[in-house]
Image: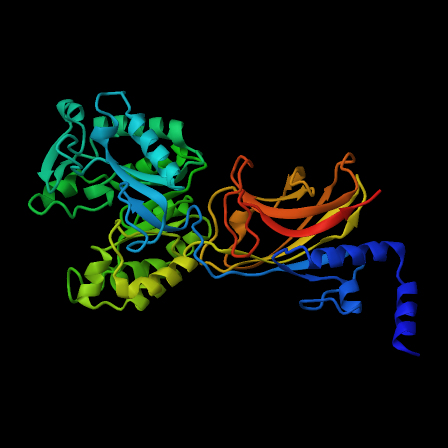
Length: 487
């Protein structure tokens, strides 16, 4: 039997549906989609360009092409400090804008809350493609105008002691607790659950809001007396838990961190990279953060709430002291860091390649490995989508964003869109399988349609997260495959 006779016999075995399926396969092959495409028809007739898949004549399997670039995604990466923006040749793109505001600045008079300062920071962050994180603190002189705790509070009789950069108030004073609780609840009522807020840093205690007495060089005994009791520490944490429901929270290591984490917060540390900056026989990395992350409670917190760090000094200090940058960065990834605040300071040029590779792994990084879907479907029919994903970052996401699909016609008009029931907050590093099925609207005309995928914002209006695959469109969606609707 010659080649033409063999081909004729094969073609006679193809049903009308498979002819259409084969046409669709060839159409996909030449459409320019950034995927590898497999069908049982393609395998049988020599058109496959990827791994073998289970034989199923009604399904198409696509394998998007993975990319290796840095993804400037919300809630992971580097943060900008107080709006200071450096050129990209000196500092990675910042995805989070981080601010600290004193109580005096946020409540200049009793009950008069300065929301405007936060609103302006949100607008500035959004203009740069960032979300906002902030800390409210009762001690820290930000400028000559705002001196730690508000003067009106001190005039009420709340005791304080002069310390570095301002005054340290009595955190156990009933008036301090009463008015500070009102402050936290007022800002929670305005910003809790806002998609513009990445996280809130619980900083209502101690020097610089870091839950310590490090600023009390000459007044340590008084500061220790004014430091909140364990009961009051837990009460302060509770204010944030109740007031900022729906917003990720972090708390500095120290103080009530165990209580906070056990109730669902993440944590942060403000001296990342310290390998002897203060004492040659002691450092934060080995003697504080290492033991903390070995603790089952803190060590597992990253699975449900973020872990954030701030550099000790600036990176140039590390470079000058001869620190091992690769060791420092490995520790950060091992501790499942999502965001690093480098204080808007330049990255040493010799380390930029190391920092960029580190940036790729911070937080989450989603790869769509494979998508199998119904190839040909009738209106009111069920479209099946089985997808395989991998999170190759070191942490999940912490916001309720949505995995979504849509169909576009050849005129680029969206004719159907829907979201998956998958909870992306459960996507820890590793593989994840998602099975979805949707009934297509009956009014969709017959024809060939593009199948897109995206991760949307909380309100499902905007594509929000870049994937580590090719196919990104200008609207943030990814063109993955095509399918046919026939009557």
